[in-house]
Amino acid sequence: MLPYLVFLLLSLSTHTHGENPAIKLILTDKGLQYGKHMAAVVLTEKMKNMSFPDISGGVSIGLLGTVDYVLSGMSVSQCDFPEPSVDFYEEVGLKAVVSDLNMRVNGRWNTNFGIIYDSGSFDLAVSKVGVTSVVRLAENEEHLSISSETCSAEIGDVHINFHGGASFIFQPFVDSFKSRIKGEIQGKICPAIQQQTEDLERQLAAIAVSFQVGSDLVLDVPLSSSPLVDSASLELDFKGEFYSAKSHTDPPFQADDFSLTCQDSYMLSLGMSEFTANSVSYSYFSTGVLVAHITDKMIPAVSPLRLNTSSFGKLIPQLPKLFPDLLMELSVSARKVPMFSFLPGEVQLGLPGMVTAFAVQNNATLTPLFKLQADSVFSGQVSISGNKVRGSAALSNFTLTLVSSEIGPFKAAFLESLVMLGIKTGVLPKLNAKLGEGFFLPSPHHIQLVNAVLKVNKGFVAFSCNFDV
Ligand SMILES: *[C@@H]1O[C@H](CO)[C@@H](O)[C@H](O)[C@H]1NC(C)=O
Ligand SMILES: *[C@@H]1O[C@H](CO)[C@@H](O)[C@H](O)[C@H]1NC(C)=O
Ligand SMILES: *[C@@H]1O[C@H](CO)[C@@H](O)[C@H](O)[C@H]1NC(C)=O
Ligand SMILES: *[C@@H]1O[C@H](CO)[C@@H](O)[C@H](O)[C@H]1NC(C)=O
Image (cartoon, rainbow, N blue to C red; front, side, top):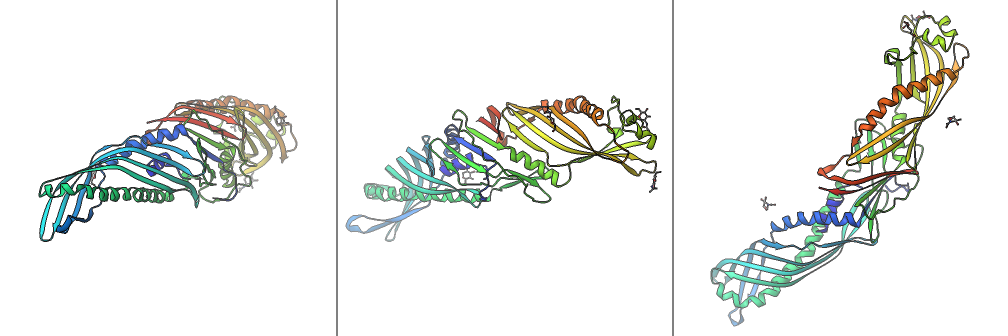
């Protein structure tokens, strides 16, 4: 029973390097109770279709000798399955208690008394079944691991009625039969739970701990430590690092530790460190994809400044004299890894850039003109409504510094304000239109997020929500 519950709750995967986790997930008691309810529904359906192994034995009928019997084809015809109680079990895992479970089982009986064979059907009522099971949640080779810690099962009573054949002969011996059958069934409950737990453990061990994201990235989310279970919640800590699908190199920076507060009024809380976002930046930067070539065709028609030497003559008077009437091209790249900083209520992105300007000769040769250091800082807000995350961004700082020049010195200040204007009027409105439209959070199995909240804190972003199916 617990195994199903855990599986429903944690269809999530789960390195132990002593590294700080970058993704943390907290399941509260509210989430556990919701998961339990869902699991109970599934389980009741499963119980209805449950079958039992055959029971065979012998019953002594006084001086006459022993009747050998086989009870076979047993299946549940009716099951009254009260919702179990499931709770966090501090420092261990989960504890489930089922009480007052009643069920009816139909089957066939066959007896063999000397040379006399007989058969018929029977119905069995098993009442007041109580099961207490504790499972341990642990970390095993970077995966969430589950094992049965303790289990006890007890059956209140068993009633059995035989039909057909010479039933009337057996019915009087039912009492001697009952304790045997009760013992047989009672003895099978915990091994069945153990079996289910082992099946679940195999499924958990098979869950991938890294996922391809798009064509360029892999998200690595192995469990970074043992699950933390207290009386009110379960916390799972994951590595949470993106790396390039082409080469797995770890970034030269590490995740700072953060603590995600348990929000009792939400089923689930998730915390993601700025490290996870920065590992994306690092993988793009280290694989050399943060490079763009800008040509005049890409400059919006409304721009007063064109990418050609005459147009640039207004800013750099010597340029058109040295290179008259030529188109220009810019190579823009990241000088260092662009880094995200999560601050209370705000996300900042620092983009350290390098711009190299070329003149495009009539034979298509690119002649280097000058190099600029272009550093921008963007700040943004994120919000969530329903299953959708929206954002907005603004340019909070931009500096352009001349690094080297093949055409003699010039002042970068005027160019700086022009580019800044270009970002503010050309780039940001388009970006904000996209961010404002937002994107849907992935919702597996048609799970609706209810009352989702998102808050940017120092170093991490916290997300909490309830579910509805
Ligand atoms: C019940 O089990 C039988 C065979 O064991 C299977 O064919 C049937 O689809 C099951 N029904 C449900 C509702 O799971
Ligand atoms: C350069 O830009 C100016 C506008 O500033 C335009 O009139 C001119 O035709 C352009 N020259 C080339 C070579 O594209
Ligand atoms: C291309 O033209 C430039 C300027 O006219 C010249 O200096 C250069 O040698 C030429 N390159 C080739 C490959 O023709
Ligand atoms: C912008 O950045 C420069 C250099 O990085 C710094 O000196 C300046 O104080 C910053 N301006 C603002 C408004 O943050």
